[in-house]
Image (cartoon, rainbow, N blue to C red; front, side, top):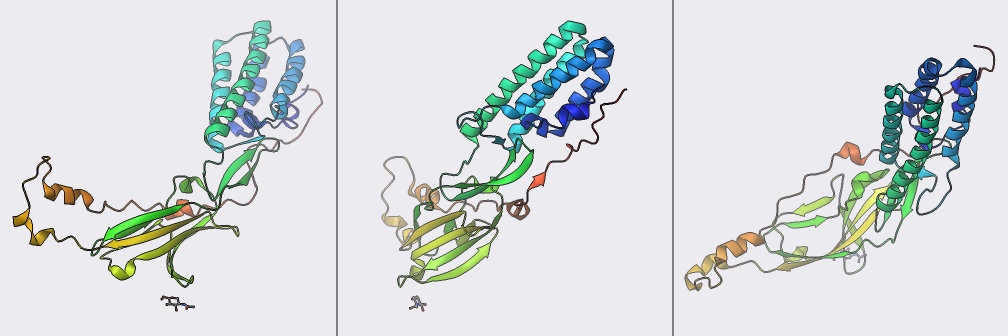
Length: 310
Ligand SMILES: *[C@@H]1O[C@H](CO)[C@@H](O)[C@H](O)[C@H]1NC(C)=O
């Protein structure tokens, strides 16, 4: 009799890259089939199962629906869906021909659902960076290999115009929402860009924010931040143009202030202009997570293909 190793050895399609799906199918073949199917039918069903499962590897490639790779959350979603469908089948206790029919319907249904999950991934989470370089960890379905994919967009991540009052805090924020999902990042470097086109490195740090308290007129000018990666290309470059405005002088003239006409007291207006509190720094460990090596997912090591008798 054909063992499950033979069923799954040649067939690795994305949902099968999840070890729990392989375990689920193994359980089905080892425990459920023998109790719910006459022995003479089992070999045939296992062979059909093998080819149905292999079709997961041969899904058509299309840039809207499936490109041969998905991210880990998508794989987990698809695996969960597959296993819960399989769980429904086995917990119903269905037998014989009805069971065989339902099993293959279920696999067809899950194939469609996998493509839906993959299409959703391509639409929403594939290369979410609008600029710069993001290194995204993906699982390549054919071989179940985890590999880092470079999402390259326009080098220019924009310019920010910052106005800050003298004696207040200058905050340069280099964070973009996709940074925390990117692999292979190193650190944020902040530079002062002088008019003679030279640059001076001010600081290098894990946190995406440079805060300078009590700025003076000398701090006005141009700055640049650069988020590095383990490759030669930076993940992000942002330019900042900082203007330093004169100090507010409201302490000296409250007696000359007219009563507020629009109902907003002048003290409240200034309070609203106070700099906001600093953002929480990101977890440095997460920032430094580097997975540039090809990683084989565990759990897919299939041992021996026995074609002998039971
Ligand atoms: C460029 O300007 C800065 C600030 O004025 C100065 O410190 C630096 O030495 C200058 N560099 C060159 C090469 O002129």
